[in-house]
Image (cartoon, rainbow over all chains, first blue to last red; front, side):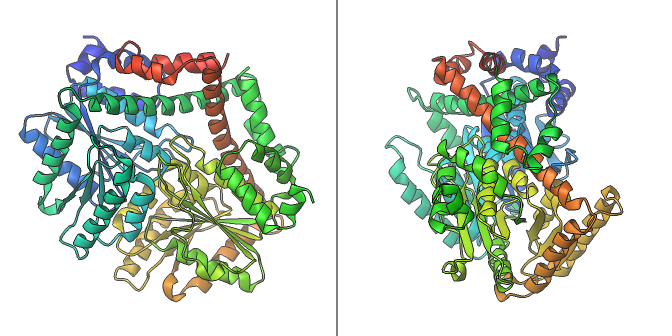
Length: 318
Length: 318
């Protein structure tokens, strides 16, 4: 059977292999992605975003359980920060989703950040496309919501869930400053902790303040309190996620299309950025120019970095 | 007086204006940066990196005080996540460094992240160059250590201080996974909290495990416990930072040069990535091609995004 057919029919080993190829940035993965693309566009992509320690993995685990009860298949992508030097992935290190490991209806993959110069959001999107083509009904993407690549990832979901916990004032500041507008659902996890009501009120205020920017027919962000470890509030979160999907897909509504176009544009721009950089680097190399020699000249103040970049990009583009 | 002379002589208003121009990405700022570059290379750049809520700002504030006691001038850059949609900065929102506001020896600037497609590390580096040329002896850069741009920023300091607090197990995981190798000094802040010794032990283990990768003459990462709010342990942190600087600058040692070359390379690559992307976008626009029309065709599956990017980059580079 052809590799495309194998992926589309959900063959786990072939899916795992192509995801690994994407992670390793093998050029061969591109043609597979090109041919898979017509099979994509059916999955509901849900992003879970929040600081380390707020319990995103546990929430994702629980929500996956709800979708499994409805016999829907689930893909999970956990985006972890990893070494900028070794580039090594720490597969499974942060995954606590033990109970789904033996369920063939759930596919779990952990992603490393890729070195220093971008590409994280691109590989995440590529992997989402693979799982989508493989027929997963729901794809859950877990990411820390700080950093531009990470915001890009959160932004490329159909439904974005922002997760916080009581007493993280700085977290609320970060949400306020950075990712307020991309949140469709706000979760206050560990809601048994002191200060949960206060956090909910702060979020309500932020939603209220932000309502000026919303149109009448826009989705109004919802707040859900959970205790993921005990499974409390997950039913409410599941319902709210489904409500958001129904809202987007309502008959006659253009919302789903709008979200899909927004996602596609973000992904296109991200991929363009990565590929333009790669192409310029390849041309420098092909011409036999040395980055290290340029660095030496800049350090010795024989050349300034602004002129150097200008010249390289000009030459690389000619 | 010429703008370059004004900046080099430390004129606060001119410095503030050029930093604003950089933030606004005014093309005119480039020629200023080009001409300022020969005046750079003297400052000691110290990065403070850690999750929201660990007390980075307070630490930076306290360390600034120590340098002021030695009559050294200080520049502070706080890199905050901000809205991917509005692009607006939240100047001062997170800055609690009240007592330095009236001190002309301290220059404080808060940076926003820039939209969705990169440029954060580039503007941070540009601003560091301005403050360096303006004669600041020490430049303190505060950033959340998650996300690739942020890791790039942390990586472009001479001395990198990683800050955590007791009981953030996930934080230790993140350090382990992502930024262990770039930490020269580890701070356990809020050391009066339960679990401080445990956190120190975990960090010691990580340093020990990582020691395999170090050469005999490499710096051995140090751990400092602090209570920044009460000013405890800051003297020790200050001494350790100075010890690292002395280590790098020791007579006959090539360490400082190595660090400077590493920083320069990271900055050059980051700037290349941003400029290559910008150049390709400009060419698309100049040709009258429409990104939105491409998006529509991709959403309608008339075209796949991989082929689209390939074609755009190829055309943009021809």
